[in-house]
Length: 360
Image (tube, rainbow, N blue to C red; front, side):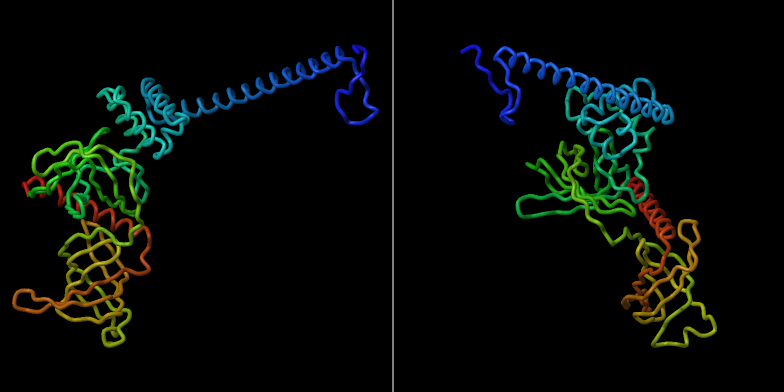
């Protein structure tokens, strides 16, 4: 019975036969070969991983040197990266990964210390993440800035109240929103509120944020959040103005005389945005008329801004009638529009700061 020959693999009737002892040796050899090959494969992968990590570390060292990070900040960035299973170079290079790492790191109460917050704030500043570039998406409420206009949405049951506010204070853990000169609606029993903010050239963001405390009648302290809805918006922030404007007509189907002789007209821009303006004149123009405007906003000159009259509204101004024309830009260069939007947001922040300084 012990001399019985067996087939190691039933491939054919001509396969060499082995004794049970030879078969066990055969299997042991195969297993040994697999183990040796596996060991060399694992070693090769480990060497590749170490080489790749060395390259990543070298990249981070170079980036940290360019950013001016200290050794402590380098080590801290590496700790932050481990929370999101990313490389430290990704943390200091990608705004989303940075914000995610900050959020995950500070979720731990043991890590939410004043010293750690200071280091994070310093890294944020050196990486340039404290002020998002124009048109750049944001990923956290930490990307908002002091004096930025926002809308606070307070929901209680089926009712919803929206209040125009501004960001009055911000750090790595919390931000304060404030309503100038007015009392905010009751927030009793609420754990979360929504905060709506528009980013210039980008979109409208609605953050769902934890309500931490009410600081008097007009200030709320909120916890930061990365939970938001992003809505691409066509409307632009609009500010009230009283700017003289000169313009000429390039199309006027109902009054062709306006096109002759290069006639120039003057009016007042009553408000302005990145999408259009309200032009006030004693003379009534027609919907569909096209004009080319020149004006000065915040010390910057704008020439050849093309606009089309969308609608006209009559109103009383003192004892005389005037006409307000809603004008929409067309064929405007992106650089010119972005310049307008930047100036408008700057003027808007100045207005908020001024109102706050006088207690309104």
